Length: 154
Image 1 (cartoon, rainbow, N blue to C red):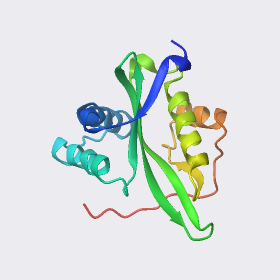
Image 2: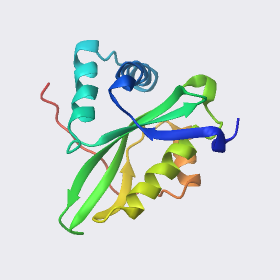
Image 3: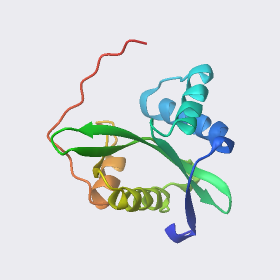
Image 4: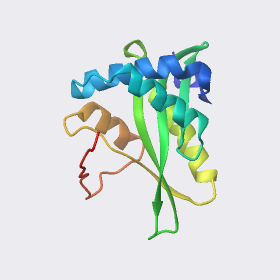
């Protein structure tokens, strides 16, 4: 399989189940965290119904969903435009290192660079996930000097 065999499309409600399953698998794999179905499933439905929150893309190999990612938005007053944040990236283990993420990233980059008011693409990556970091760097992303801080309420 080569990257050109992968079709990347905007997700619809028919993809909710597989995206939820992929998100659960990704959370376990990267953080050892179990995402409850009653949170993740409605969370995915929310973004699919309300484009102001962002959107999901799915990667298809002969009609089978083999990867997904979400795009959410961050307003930058310094740039008077939006950053698109790549989130919830998952590629099925059987399709890793075969160009699936490259195809999805290329699709995102094309959409973002053509969209008025979008100044760039960002993502966060686990500190220890060197494989993903190498992939992102090969695609032209750079590590910034920022660290992410958070406080969760739920």
